[in-house]
Length: 255
Ligand SMILES: C[S@@+](CC[C@H](N)C(=O)[O-])C[C@H]1O[C@@H](n2cnc3c(N)ncnc32)[C@H](O)[C@@H]1O
Image 1 (cartoon, rainbow, N blue to C red):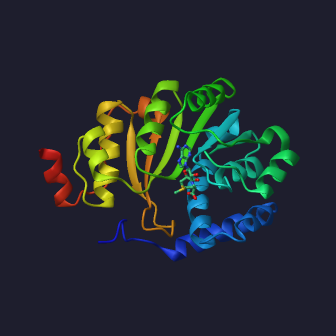
Image 2: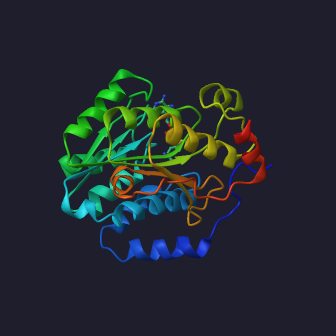
């Protein structure tokens, strides 16, 4: 069994690459991927998520922080925010250290790019960092790409607690026993896990979560859970899980 959606679209990725390469600072960004295990895959993930942020017009009119959680050493979405969003600042945090090239970039860009390494998502320091981000901007977007196992649940809970404006979460792997215990859904596939997280966000936490497939992301795990607090507040209709569920998920949901 393939753990993922099994749907990717290389052409869409190439269009994204073409788009970013038409801007001057893009070389600065792309060279960060030299030496990565799977540079094209990682690039596609970062660009797909960043395009959502770039297309969000609120980032043009409000002082914005994009906080990339479990950012990995390259913190690509925080870097893109610092380079391309005029009113945006990129903040990145991970339990590990950041790549020296990202540290150098952060030293050069100052307030535009701030790094918070060696913070566990399960710690109080993480909650404090999220609160600080909340207090330091008008518009807070939290990004979590391929955040493994229960860290996805944790980020949903902390986002809810501190009152972020938008969360873009790309689920990754899961441990079935944990999922059953914490989210109450039995999982056998990637979509089951995405569904479990969506259900937890929507039903338990009351977050207006939507699920979309992002096939420009050249990864098997390429579903996005997008929580946009403002769009939800404007809409009168009840938001629903928008991806057509495979039957097995529907059956699990009934139990
Ligand atoms: C699968 S990687 C994803 C990295 C990056 N977002 C990406 O898409 O390439 C998971 C990341 O979570 C980080 N991580 C693992 N445990 C963590 C924890 N307890 N707190 C914060 N970050 C953690 C790892 O260091 C790693 O960078």
